[in-house]
Length: 265
Ligand SMILES: [Ca+2]
Ligand SMILES: [Ca+2]
Ligand SMILES: [Ca+2]
Ligand SMILES: [Ca+2]
Image (cartoon, rainbow, N blue to C red; front, side, top):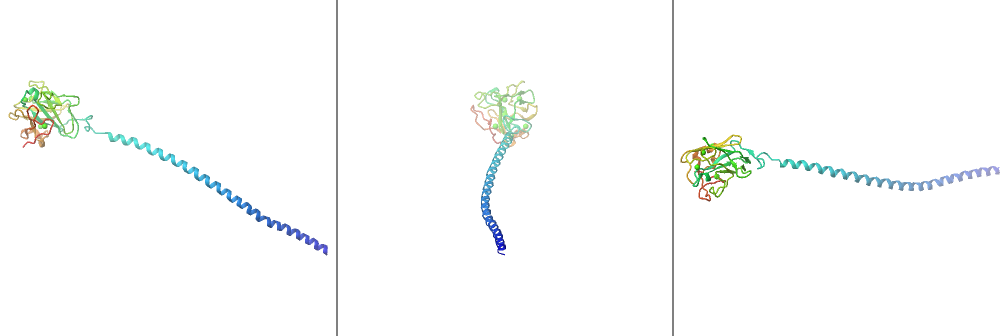
């Protein structure tokens, strides 16, 4: 009976010993592993990917394509201009663009030196009057000559004075931008002191203006000009809208060459 108790006791003691150890070991080993694993993986993956890829791709494409295409097309179309807006690209004259504005018919000095015709540009554009012809209803016909290259390209609203003699000191003190050959028997042009016609014809043979006058129209020593409010190709047809022009020329005659006409009352 005692032997049996001893065997049971030993078995029980052995069982309880193994069970005690297995229960004690588990919590110590678990807590040691858990702290080590928790710290390490949380540091490494959170820092690395957040810095590197966010900076690189955002800089390059934003700067380059925005500047290049805006320069070229904005400059070129603004410099383009229409015909007649610059002296380099003047328009050809048509009816209504210019007017016979003032005539020195009967100068004090020699006719061959001191006759002149003033033409006015009625437009806001540059007009090319090269090849212009002065005529009358009889024998006169002459293609006006430039005084210098481009002198017959007429500025907007400007004047073109065409003289029998270009020299300022010989012609009574007039600045001239075109000349004609004074001649009364053909091959030239001249303004009769009694009655005559003045016809302007373009290089394309278009009649730009005509003015006729009769005896008594032109006093000696003074030019005749159309009143500014009648300065159109049809408005200047009536000689009553013309009058003597009061402006002192250096050699003593009167006129307003290259300037606005006096108003006729
Ligand atoms: Ca004539
Ligand atoms: Ca004359
Ligand atoms: Ca006319
Ligand atoms: Ca004038």
